[in-house]
Structures are given as structure tokens and as C-alpha cells.
Length: 402
Image (cartoon, rainbow, N blue to C red; front, side, top):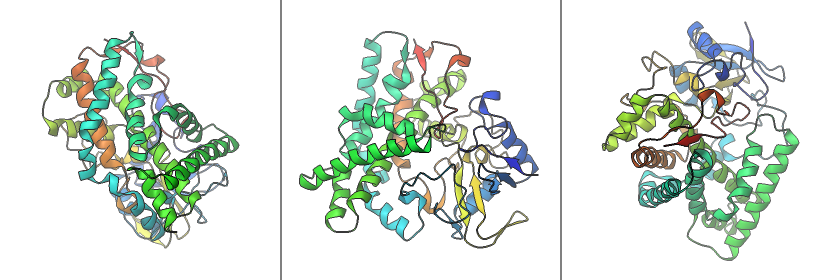
């Protein structure tokens, strides 16, 4: 049997989050997982790639050098009509992937990220001060979840925070599922022009920031100016959209699980905070279109053969709910050892910014509920607008009070 996926990915893949718990994978993914680790699915263009629903098989394939991330290869399961954009290094294979990734990886090491923790703590505290001094109710997305990572990535990259409205509006268009290819291309072009201008400024007057380091690669001939701008676009979007959605969605999940929220709020144990972040990353899912690959050779796995040139889709939300790996997977338990989750991927393409995301989430989650212990929803769960129309899942608004 071949199931049908919607054009943008898995969100409407039959049975949606809206049909049940907004934090759970679509029921159809659970059904397919019970049937076996691999199933054929049909995409918008008639292609029939493999859908991988279990944890062990996803990890094996993500680490397999016979599996390619190159979105330009025949058979790659693309999410929609090609817009003509040049793909970023996350959709490339080694050695080019490694060469480009290495140019920007230094600021994202655990040691460098930990040195930023006091500055991130100050950002979080200042925003909470503003919350406490302002009116109630308040939209936590606009007032807290979005500014935290936006301020951090702007400081890291060397992008003026005063321009955050411009790059946030355009990034929303790029990741919106129902935006036309033309609109996405136009938004990407505006961001590329903006970053190109900033790269030019860094070439003329370098500073102590990541974009200046990228501009140095242009001077040495290792990177074109266009390539530098596109790398800046990737880092800017990835640096604020994903973490912002995790802050808001994680807060909502905790508010719906008050016992877990109380455990986190009342603890001063950094290990519990770190564990809570890992469990929320496992339990939730903000990249709901699935990781996409194409086979470079025949691969035998789980009693099936994925042939050379066949596409592969690996939704991490259902892998992180595999009961063989995570007992009672649909329960949120911040004391669980969830460090094996695949929220950041696995293998050479696992998320470059994961140390920064983890640290930001640790600071945000450990501070917000302590300083506002009475935090609660200011509306019913059913009235919260979820991002069912986005490639990045989350909530558009989160009205809260205390």
C-alpha cells in the first residue's frame, strides 16, 4: 500500500496534529510505525520514496555514507516545485559540505557557547523584566520567545537587531508551506540582498562577529560573495526560527503538564534542566517535513532493499516516539534520559547550532517559570493558532498571564 503525502511534507499526511494532541505526530505515522519501519509513500509529483518511521533505522540511514543529502540528485524527495534557489551546504554532501560547514562551526562549539551563557541570561532577564512591568495578558511569542534567539543570533552574526522585523517577516514567508514558489523566492532574494550588503560592510570594516569571519573567506577566495550572503541567510533563519518555536511550544507543553512544570520550576539542579530540554526536544517536533535523502547505492535494511536513486524521508517526530527506544513515548517526562533523540539529526549532517540551541533553551526554561511562577494560558488551548501551514511547527501566538 502506498500512502500519499501532501506537497510540503508530513503535516497533513493523512491525519493531522489538529485531529488530536497538538504535540503528537499524525496518527497515521503511528499506524505505519506499528506496521513496520519502512513504507512507500507518494509525493505531490508522483514520486514514491521510502518513509522511515522507526528510530534504529533512521539512525542507521542518517549515518550511512551511501545516503545523500544532495537535493539536486535525481530521486531526491523534494517538498515542492523547485524555485531555482542555490541550495545551502546543509543540502550538500562531503567534501563540499564539510568544507563550507567548517567555515562557520567555531562559534558553535560547546566551549564557545558556554562562554555566551551569562550574556544570554542577561537577555532573558531583561525581557522578563519587561514582561513583569508591562500589561497583561501578553503574547509570549512576540514578547519573549522570538526576541531571545533573535537577539542572540544578531549579536553572534553581527546583524543589527533593529532590522529584526525585516528578516523575521521574510523568513516566515520562506518557511510557510502555502507560500507560492515565487513568494518564497522573492523573500529569499530580499534576504540575500540584505546579507550581501552586510557582507560588503564587513569586507570594508570587519568586526568581531561571525559574518566578518565569513567575509574573510571571500577575501581569500574560498567563498564567493554570493555564497557568503546565502550562508548568512541560512544562519540567520536557522538561528532564530527554530529556537523561538521551541521556547513557545515547550512552554505550552509544560503548561499542559503542570506536574512536569512544577518539577522544573522548583528545581535548582542544572542536570534536571538539561534533561528537561532534551525531553522537550524529543517530545515536540518543529521540523515536521522530515529529513530527506536519496540512496547512492542499494541498501538492505529491515528486510527491504532501498534501491540506488530512491528517495528517503525520515520524520524525526515519529522516531522520537518509538516505544522500542523510549518507553511510554507519548508521555512527557523531564526525568527521562532522552539524550538519544534525533531532534538535531544524526551523523555528519546533524545540526551545527545544537549547542547554542540547547543553551538558550536551558536558560529560557530555567528562568521564565521561576521568575513568573504563576504563568498560565490566557485563552483556551483550542483557540491557540498552531503553525499547521509552516515548514517549522509552533504557535503563532501564545497569550499568557499570571
